[in-house]
Image 1 (cartoon, rainbow, N blue to C red):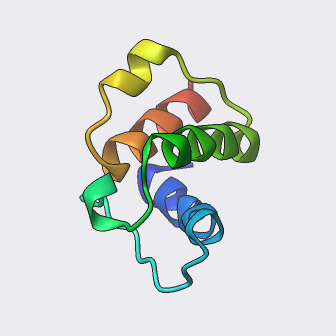
Image 2: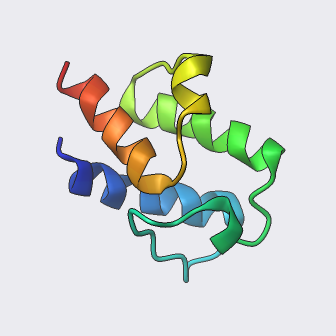
Length: 81
């Protein structure tokens, strides 16, 4: 799964999490772009992504993320080994 496919697969997770069907994720989307994306929502997103993609994240990996594009890149990297 490439980064764009991961980004597309993340979009419904974000829409469900924030109960907002109008969320259109881009690689540049950050927490500042989505109302309600606080630390608790962030943890919930990580857990939902782990379940959706069957991957686990290290704390150090998550600390280096700056936007959804980096998150999609990390997931794609884990999926493609």
